[in-house]
Amino acid sequence: GAVVSQHPSWVICKSGTSVKIECRSLDFQATTMFWYRQFPKQSLMLMATSNEGSKATYEQGVEKDKFLINHASLTLSTLTVTSAHPEDSSFYICSARAGVYGYTFGSGTRLTVV
Amino acid sequence: SQKIEQNSEALNIQEGKTATLTCNYTNYSPAYLQWYRQDPGRGPVFLLLIRENEKEKRKERLKVTFDTTLKQSLFHITASQPADSATYLCALDAAGNNRKLIWGLGTSLAVNP
Image (cartoon, rainbow over all chains, first blue to last red):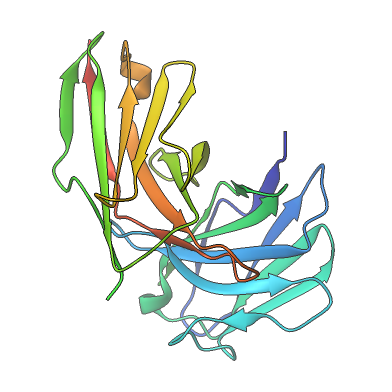
């Protein structure tokens, strides 16, 4: 089945530094990937839609200069949290559309900014 | 505004019983409704998808119903097992090119041995 690999699974960084999260589709090509953020006891919130070879589409209220998304190939999308602050601490999850209807999710990245 | 509601309280049932989870939505006409399982600290895992013109879908011990008149989906796990304990999320999927998923908060299920 379609597998999405997400790394790292957790990261702790200092305030002001940048963190890159990778999302790879292992056995299929993902022209579109989605990046979500999830706070404790909250639902998944879509941050942006990443399309291979073009600029990402950000949801309202998401700062594109802070959350840089690069989808340079059909199997890799990256999310970089720039100048991270404690309020950016969250669970970040990527997903890709695998087939006509299904969505496959990465295992998530727990980001803690101290 | 568009809203998705799932049982906010955790559901505790005894092993072997049938778990029934509810997903209600308002101001939305989804083409598809999906159910996912999410374990703590993990990404969601796709379980079932049901289309607007389908009343019921089954997969092993799982059954999903979709009532577009009531704007409700029910998710059943029969012969529940402790390993079924997780949070279950429903998500609405609009048709068209912009196929974003809109998520409910999820219902936590605990199956007691």
